[in-house]
Image 1 (tube, rainbow, N blue to C red):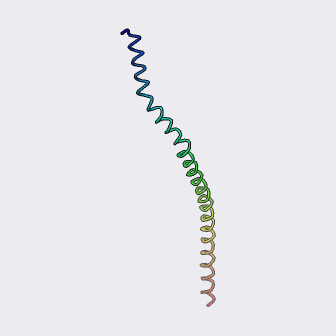
Image 2 (cartoon, one colour):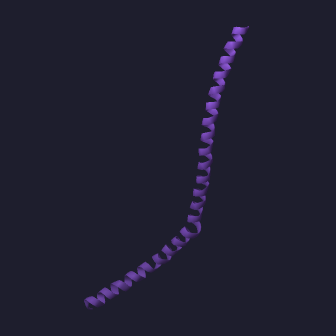
Image 3 (cartoon, rainbow, N blue to C red):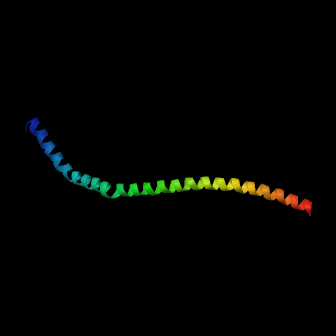
Length: 86
């Protein structure tokens, strides 16, 4: 057997060994494309929506805290005035 024949035989043997892997890789690609990627996109969409809602909520909470601080100050001032009157 010549070197070229030996190399050709080895190449054929490698092709036969790799053939089942090609099918497995194709199945994995299809699973990624049809199942996993759509789910990841859905998770990303939900996360983004929730993040935006929480971000808006944080701004509202900060505004409410500022209002509460002002209300506390005004109530304290009014309490002092009422105590002086009574």
